[in-house]
Structures are given as C-alpha cells and as structure tokens.
Length: 103
Picture 1 (cartoon, rainbow, N blue to C red):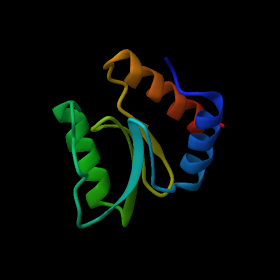
Picture 2: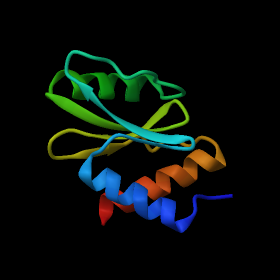
Picture 3: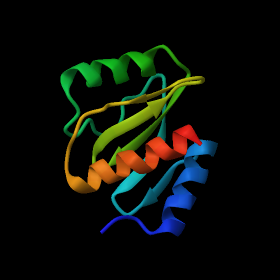
Picture 4: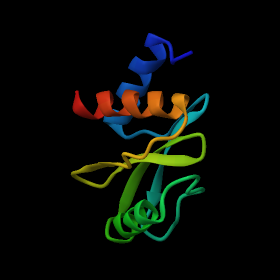
C-alpha cells in the first residue's frame, strides 16, 4: 500500500524546503561537509562514491532515504536520484521524491 495523498503532499513540501523529516520508512536529513550519512543501505558503490563526493564538495547535502538507502540528494543547486531499483515500496518512495523534485 502506498503513501496516503496527505503524506505525499507533506513530503513534497518538506523536500522543497529541504527540511529533515521521518515519516514511516522514508526520511531526510542534512549531512554536513565533515560528516557521512548514517547509512548507505543498498546503494551501489558508484552511487556511494557520488554521494561522498557531493558531500565533500559542498557545505551541506540534503539526503532522502527509503528505509536505510539514500534514494535522492541535493546540493545547493542540483538533485541526484540513484535510479537503482529496489523493493516495490522503495520504488514508490522514489516516485514520490521525483514528483516533489519536479514540481
């Protein structure tokens, strides 16, 4: 079962404002330049390296997770989505974040 529409709207707003949140199995945090994310989950080594690079070259990086896997992140100006496929639920989370980013 997917996220309810009200939850999706809340996520859209929080992502646009780049605010940390925890709503069930989807969450977001700000990772500062001298930190690493809490988890890399099932992220591929190429995407782990991309995320580490983005964090090390920017003051702060906003990271969105499904369960413990980063599925999207942004620096000051651009978003990166892993594009990797996981569970049905994580794929749904990716769709919700993609919609938030594009709106």
